[in-house]
Image (tube, rainbow, N blue to C red; front, side, top):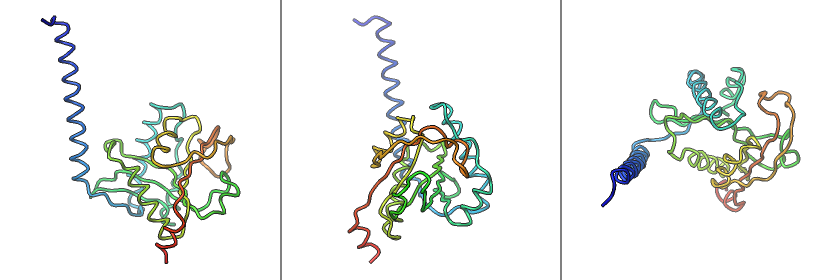
Length: 212
């Protein structure tokens, strides 16, 4: 017969498995209940946008020695004005924000001439982790590219963050290059050190058929 110590270990394992099962079930239920929408951010979203940036920065400090160092409100206001700052919401809850651009010659050089969309500054509400929100962003970006004649979805992230780079690769991005850079004029101060460049290519016939 089992000793008390072995029985205690077995009980701990069973309890951990039960919690993991319940967490998985909770995520599945939450996914079904959430009605995610993607829309351009508005000026009255700015306060909540900064809350998500703060959440992201706090999380970055737990996994890396690099983190965002703040963003000027004029940058956020300009992106909102130009319809380049997007939000993912469920009713009144903001789940995620991200920015887009259509040119990034400073990092991509000659490749910047190719029709592309650049995704920047993804900030997730950490209360909603595990809901495949990155998949939702990629689906949106593919549709945007198809409707606007863009062939590439591009991103960049810190070059030393292998875990994040591998995650993006699992999402379908190719890690094309890692570049060295000093402080870049006109960009937030955390743009220094190594920068990984990632790209996802869309099928050209798919794009032409969609915009025809």
